[in-house]
Image 1 (cartoon, rainbow, N blue to C red):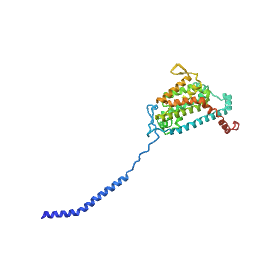
Image 2 (cartoon, one colour):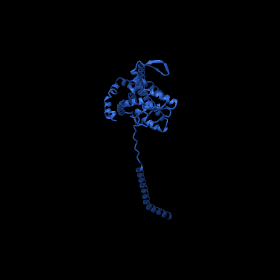
Image 3 (cartoon, helix red, strand yellow):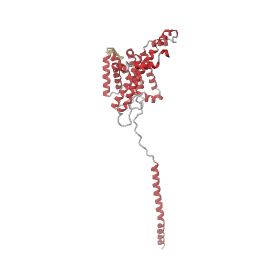
Image 4 (tube, helix red, strand yellow):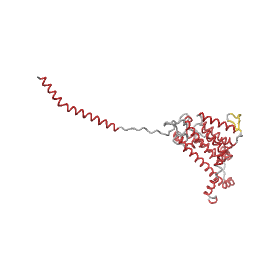
Length: 355
């Protein structure tokens, strides 16, 4: 009797408690659903970052000549990116020769004052203190205008070489003093990279070659035209380097004045093909300038076709071609037609007596 009564009591309790258990179970399920919805809504959906088309350059502590830009985007740099550097090269060349014409006019304008200074300058000149400074002053006074301009170019190259040794300046140097079509800045580095050298041997060889051919080409061009020619040759050599890099897909950065110096060398050899040249380490081996020019063009062309990467052969070839083109046709289209600009500048400046 007792067991049967207990069974009945348990059944009644289970019937009374089953609705409450179902409500608790339903409440737990709804609570879990609400919490899952809140957690899903609180999650921030991260969008994939857009692929960058520009690449930040990274320096190699051992040697900058082997520095290479690895693009983060798939595919190559399009040829359309060369439109802006091409336009910059054209405008920079025109401005360089225009500025050189104005510089020449200002030099002609000050000739009267210079004659007065030469006549009465002996009364105001004081000797330099120290024997070395006196010798240095006498040596500098004997230099021509083109040679003095070249000394300024060499001084700028040495100063930029020193800036590479300052760690705090290396990000600036990498952005503005190295040239590559895959970099963020492409126009201004076409000029600044021609004054940039990272290795001491690179700087020494380039400056020696530049100084060796300065006197020969300076007699034909003059200091004003020489400076415009040098800067324009560096810019156009950088542009041809850009073109070859985009075509080949190799975005190694370029530094050095080799392209501009090759323009000077190409102009000298084209104008004086019978001049005798010799290599520094092989002074007994001489050859004509015309033969050396043909050999250089052949070597640089081979380097471009075969993809040699020890030097920037495209920049070397661009400098040689620019030097030959300028001496053959360029000076007639640029320098020989400077008279209208000089007349306009003279009209704006007025006569020296009106100043």
